[in-house]
Amino acid sequence: MSYLSNQDEDAIAQRLSALPYGVAITIEGSPDDHYFAETLDLISYLTALNPEKVSYTARVNASGVKVAMHSDETPDLDIAFWGVPSGLEFTSLMDAISLYGGMPYEIDSMMLELLGQLATSVTASIFVTPT
Image 1: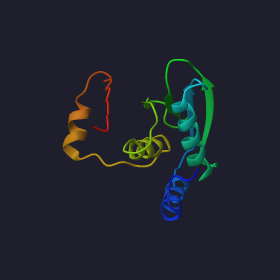
Image 2 (image 1 turned 90 degrees about the horizontal axis):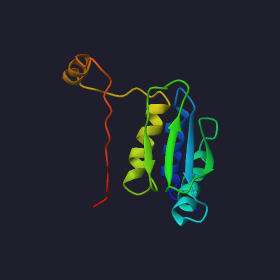
Image 3 (image 1 turned 180 degrees about the vertical axis):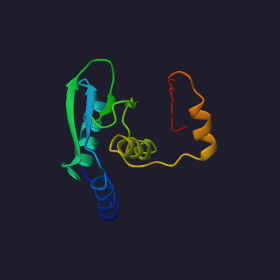
Image 4 (image 1 turned 45 degrees about the vertical axis):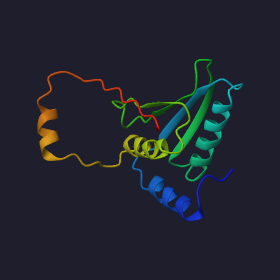
């Protein structure tokens, strides 16, 4: 299945090829869940655009669809998507892949100053719904 236009495929392939590090994606879910099949199809499609930089594995798990990422170069990140990261969540998925892949990101100086004042690690849970 083709999710993107040829122009968008080329843009994503270029973005993936610019990643300094490779990213491994793990998809968990039940083979009986149609969302798992859709997610597997989407991630397979995405990784086919640049298999040298992005790879995936699938694991059977009965607790819903989960997409998690890993890179040996960015072990402090812990981002997971519950459900199919398509539609509005596709941009967030691409941003997460870029972060794991070592792409620089911009944080304004005031935010950096505030983050520098933290004495302990902080866990943030962000929930997104397309409503």
